[in-house]
Image (cartoon, rainbow, N blue to C red; front, side, top):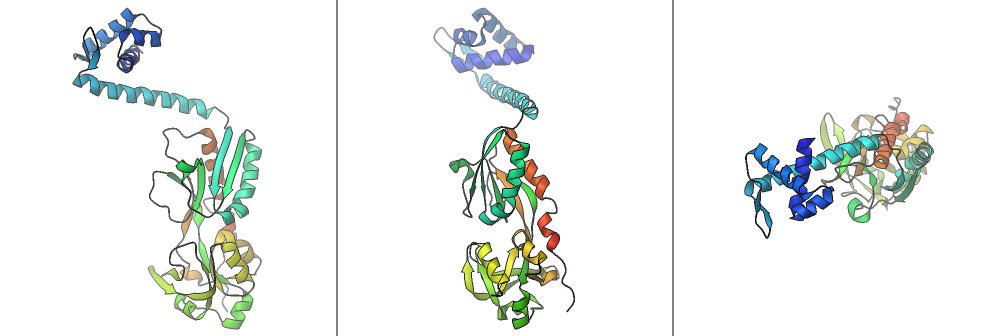
Length: 308
């Protein structure tokens, strides 16, 4: 503790550029502060401060020591705050951003259950499919789906995001069932435009990635519209299982090209990179990870198609 007290006295002297002001900040006498700095220099065997009657300045060694001391004390404060927060109930307003379809289908019921468990947290949620800047727009956390862009944000994987090719039984009866990815070039496909290269679908065949160019007459930047069209027999869709799961379970859609399912990505919670993660954000992210992953409930409807 003597060493920490000496370091704190040294930092205050440097910050205030005065022994008198530092003593006032620390509620000590000037002589005590002066003695601590002298003892610190004697123990280190180096002069830390240049003293004149008019001003104080750091020596080269003192500058390096000052930088180390500030980091050490900051880490100590962070450690104490982290321990305190482990025992603190999460509270306050939590601003969340999430994609529209996933938010309505899965996040909405999750938030209701979360608020039941944490009644002292207020939720402010914004659902849209645009890419938001968490820091500039003041979000605490966002749910994102797909491959993440490089950024300074912290990301935690919540669940796999599997995508499937599917169509209604009525469509397949009229147009036939594709047996290999290349067959899709001869079918009506429903195209999601909120991704680059909407007309190029990728598959994994024998460990290799294949790209198939498809075409269709319906383009949309929302998966729900395309899913409704697929259920109505208007074409073949590539859909995330979190969206298509209920229709697959009800038999309204059939899973196609099961062994060539398009490459999966993931559902993530992302939040700004801070030295200290607030209890409300930690509680929310932990809750979603427990509810959704590692094998999400919406994938229970994915089954290998029966022969024929």
